[in-house]
Length: 413
Ligand code: AMP
Image (cartoon, rainbow, N blue to C red; front, side):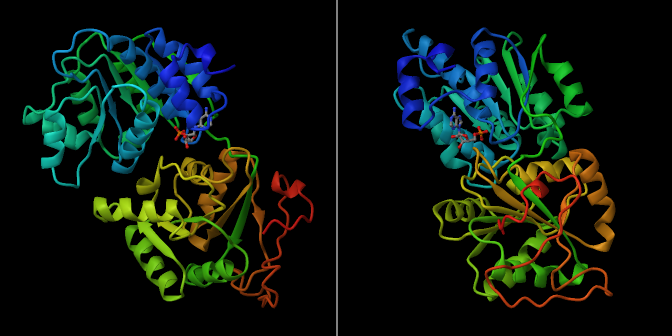
């Protein structure tokens, strides 16, 4: 299928071609016709599947057709609500890329930065507004946002939105939009609470599922290191020296942990930056930009700060701390090995995290490849291996059922 088959018009086709997209992705093939047809949809798809264009392109197509109508100032016709500031910025950048050959105006508003410039932006008139919930309600309270003309309401990363405690805000925003609007709900996973929300705000939605909840990319080599908690930093430094190369995201559970690791890596001469919820908006955006531009090659992040962020060309993900929610593991490692590339996920497991690894393996129906021979084993009886060669790094023991294990003896680390 081509984009032309999806009823996109010339300005959009041109923009999409210039963005380097040859053909629609699966989620786009399934979602775009339904949105153009006016249906409500509930889409289960993760970042990396092309889900943003799946809602952005049909919204732009619909608005483009309305552009000929006489204008009496711009009104917000499409509202996209996103849980995090980074995601909101990313979505608005996508809209701007696709609408470059149209007069459709997209703007983004989010908390954590000065409200004044955002007020000025809104006064100029906007067709498509992307917003985080708190700032949107704040500006609405001040009568600076009018949602009376919203025709399409998009809820992105609904599961994260609920995890972050935005349920009441989301419901409030939904009620501020007109009754007959079209609603599009996107979520990486559809747990019960998302299902409940969907039931309360969607009208006979069509369901689209692009990746099953527990799927992990077949192109990711998933490695597991048992290591005492107090030696994780040493193991991390050891792997960075010998094994892990390229652009890396390291996940930690807490903001404190992120800061601590960042300091250690910087002290050891690595180019690293970090994102977490306690950093200012500018600080987070700066870190992300530096990483995207290649000024730093290591980004340390908490899950909430990193969720949904699209970063190309990621070579490895390090789970410095294992997530206590197994689905989070799937989200994390889904960031590497995108678009047919291969990637590596290194997971560190200390004694108190063994139950997490059990749940993760149950969910993904796969045993991770255990790397037994490294200098900081959890089992004190195991003989530490001191590596002499920078090239070879750690030796690994193949797990029983892992996809990675099929790649016999190939040196991919
Ligand atoms: P998303 O899942 O929306 O975050 O998109 C992930 C990445 O895929 C982004 O970098 C998009 O620019 C890119 N992308 C979206 N649609 C396509 C497509 N049809 N072909 C190639 N890349 C795409």
